[in-house]
Amino acid sequence: MTLKIKSLTQYKNTYRESVQKPEKFWAAQARTFQWRKRWEKVLDWNFDEPDIKWFIGGKLNITENCLDRHLKKSRNKIALIWESNDPSQPHKEYTYGQLYEEVCQCANALKAMGIKKGDRVCFYMPMVPELTIGVLACARIGAIHSVVFAGFSANALADRIKDAQCKMVICSDYNSRGAKNIPVKAVVDEALRKGCRSVKTVLVQKNTGESIRMKKGRDRWWHDEVPKRKKACDAEEMDSEDLLFILYTSGSTGKPKGVVHTCGGYMVYTAFTFKNVFQYERGDIYWCTADIGWITGHSYIIYGPLLAGATTMMFEGVPTYPNAGRFWHVCEKHRVNQFYTAPTAIRALMAQGDEWPAHYDLSSIRVLGTVGEPINEEAWNWYNEKIGKGQAPIVDTWWQTETGGILISPLPGLHKLKPCYAMLPMPGIQPCLMDANGKEIRKREAEGLLCIKFPWPSMIRTTYGDHERCRQTYFSTFPGMYFTGDGAKRDSDGAYRIIGRVDDVINVSGHRIGTAEVENAINEHEDVIESAVVGYPHRIKGQGIYGFVIAGKKITNAAKFKKEVHAVVTKVIGPIAKPDKIQVVSGLPKTRSGKIMRRILRKIAAGDTANLGDTSTLLNPEIVEEIKKSAAQAV
Image (cartoon, helix red, strand yellow):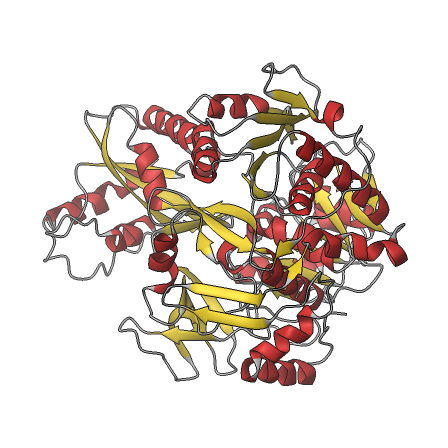
């Protein structure tokens, strides 16, 4: 059984052992799983390449550890609970036995449609049980899943399909979200018209039952293909370092990058962090509100909980539909014990008033969690007082798509909590702070750039099809270290507080969006000559998107222009990337080499114009005053 830390003393001893003898520590955790063949060597690594391998020579299938090994003792235990967008609809429950059978049926259907080990399968689906079933079916036969959040545009979906050369797309007819039904299959159809020649089959799950177009010879219904298959499917033997999935994340350049995670190390680390961060006990009901289109859904809705034999929940809807009590109603209904959500959701619900959580019995909640972005103190205090009643510790988790699992977090009931602090590293994680000159800051109380000195099992292996990009992005800034791209503070107790991104990536509602990607989209508007995008403080989202735009003609109706820009960005990327504010400017502050000085624009966007630093070296220093004066006209 995976180690579960139960006291602060045990944490300190375990952490010390894990950094002194990391290979011994992780081998002990790995031995608690079912392997077809034991590994020959625990770790081989070189951050300069980068080249990281864990449990070398080990053979396994992650779904045998998520499902098969639980069947003997837990066949009738609830593995998955699904709550519909519509609260009047009954929820669905899947026992471990039922989930195993449905995954096997789907796996057999995929094989019958020509999917084999190594093929890439793209998912573009709402939060329905078939998404979890399909992801696990891919892993069972050795296909590589690539889940794309079903809010991205057809262009963004097409880019991801083409980059991974996906052979199949699995989607739904519509996404039922709040009061709207959003066309999903229509977006897939549009994406596939953009040169996605690798796609041979589209498998469609009937979600709302509304009318859609089906292309003969390519499109097939889930209900025609899956239920008729056998309820047993032999799991494909996988090497520990075989690809498990690709997950696309925005970078500081316009093109999204496909983060690659592999089978063995990811399995070991997600299970270990799930059990410890949430202090999961047998019989608990665990709910993470994330979407499976993001890494949180992969690691802490599907893999981590199922590896631990837990009961995990999926939720199709939104926090405020049909009213602002929906989250709390679900918690009361299912007697949820661990509740894991984003600061954006907390702030949005806090704005709805204290009366909503007061209506519900939340006494079952033992652990509260936050994920996706640093939480502000006001929201932390509200979450603690109104939801946890001061009795449920908050685990403010810090991690990334690239890390695979949680790296820094309090352990509930063990660590003394500090609002807004991610606190201490998980066992095996060796964080450090670096200065701008590339030197480690040894002083205990300090602020700097957050790096990790030593590999951990679930870390990124490469960016799909472009290993050099992986090296440049994560391993070239500070040789011999993984650079997170985040700034952090460390206090006198060694606790870490994450300040935020230091590169050209904006964290909007916990979703990382590259500024270059948004700028490229804005620039497609026929009247836009050039744009610069920065993040700025946003009361609900944490960070909002602020666009400075040079137009080719005089803009007489700023609101209409903003609406047009929104339409273009929605088409190119998706509604998630729409700028919250747009300021039309006559020029942008640039260095003499032509680089836009986003540092200055960030300060103007945040309303911090008292100290913009030295602007005399700019090519056009006069533009700064002009932008400052016109900031009030931003819409």
